[in-house]
Length: 259
Image (cartoon, rainbow, N blue to C red; front, side):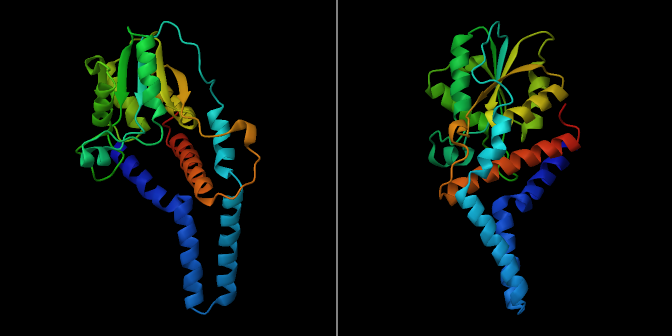
């Protein structure tokens, strides 16, 4: 069932992503022109142009991400930490393997916070969870990249439990719990990107693992959310991130994978 959910979510997102929808709109408009349906073609292409202008001028993605990023307090005060778990997200397993050099992208703050909290709470159990979200490449995984990254930064990786089979956040929580078997009443800290934290907390709640949210990797600019500026590529990227996360939240709620 988990595999069916995983594959279905990947296929649905191929069609639901804003950039894919723009291409579909353009294709429909071009096809209507080819059929000689000029009036309908102009309507479709006009709608497409209007949507693209809105994306280019306004940070719509930030507007959608802001309520997710502010659901939990940032920089929470932590005491008596028994364990720290970080979700994968920044590790580029393909480039790391290709160039034999650690390559990370966005969300690197997750691992930076993990290393910082590990130093601050040396008695805590440390867990990194993440395999590969790719449907095809499963030989070299996010956990392998993270292990090398931590080693190169002077961290004792023998103290870290690496879960490397999960493909999404649901499996992050489920497989990590099976691996660690956290005791009831212990204080576990969960590190992930701020806009991803609400869904992550709901998932960990659903699998029966009570955790303390430690959001990092913020995307929005709270003091400048109402700005107008021409930046199609950046704004489209933000919209893609926000759309994917909100769709993920709705799907996880519909399938009963969050509290």
